[in-house]
Length: 481
Ligand code: BG6
Image (cartoon, rainbow, N blue to C red; front, side):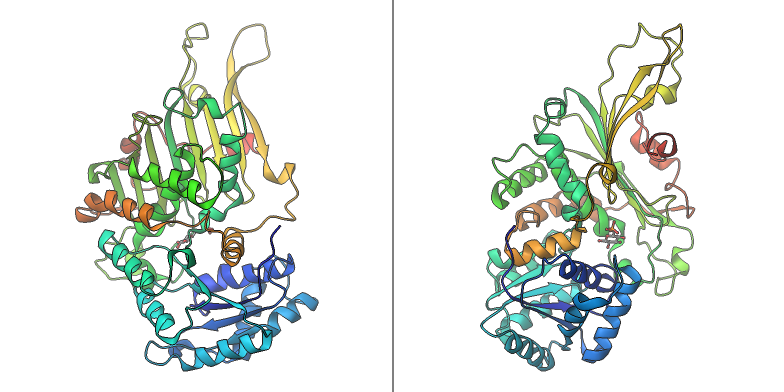
């Protein structure tokens, strides 16, 4: 394992939701795992409107780790971590407090530590912060993590890339999509490319359809300022779900290094057909317009389901259905690959639909810690040949110790410190995804209402996926115990 050089990590958006839920607890977990550099300082930043004192930032971090961390903020590792925290506000026209905080952090580490900037801020704020990093000279000797969504359409993604490249060389830029840092997404590469059982069947000759289904049970959790301008398509589909699709559909890369891996993923995006509004269902949960900060006539979608086609030799004719939304029945992260059914005429003619549908699937649950199952039909014990549903399953939690597991953000922040861009997105891939999204962004179908706790607007979602059916809700209880 490589160990990162000494770093000053500057967290923009340090008082925001992402920092509280994931980044501050994640940095503390990295410290506990001994994966932070020997010398590190963490400087929180925000505009002066929500600035904190150093002590208030330490307390804020303590509360965030208590609420969302894996373990209590106490003991010697916590004390060292807490002592590394400071705060420096930065407004576009007044970066002085931040400059002073970064300088103090660097002086306390001695030599010349590297700088890592994490832009955990809403997309409209990216450009002014990047320009400020250039103008102040902070960009030197640094790397920058840019949050998703990267732009809101092709033109804005291109403009953002230009603004970034005016200040940073591409080798310094880490466009983050934390789904790519999830253990069980990374494991798809192992499953596909290390196993003779799966590698030969991973194509249109054996797979009839693919689903990537990421329902969430939470609503927008007070994030209306971010969410109203973003919506489910930009928040989840164009980012996380299509990146996962890239991993599921890519050709084998020559190695797992950044360039070959990202080249292969980008080729998948090149092969995507433009997204048709007629193959898209947009939904809005009932009650969304009553959330504080949401316009009473908001057209923002809190749900998107759509069909994508990867028009290449491996996947032509295989529909990829993607679905994600807020306030749905369950929180799940599931990929299902439907296998071509063999002729079943030697078996009972009245095989129930749910038994028949059960067989011939590979299911990858990439929620932490995740599991993989092959669903098949087996002979039920007894004198006659009756088929029943059966499952071969691998459960991460039962098979490997979780002690070395890292959450998506933790893994990616570590990779960024190490300068490894493999699991970060690249501008050509992102621009291509925006390009195929243009028809939908230009003529989005109106959002259809759905009941909180449902699976999205009916009958639209059932019609979208016909003749297949959504795998969720599944028979988790019966098979995953
Ligand atoms: C974020 C989205 O990127 O991912 C959120 O902005 C979403 O809306 C979250 O809830 C889901 O990530 P995770 O890791 O909690 O599954």
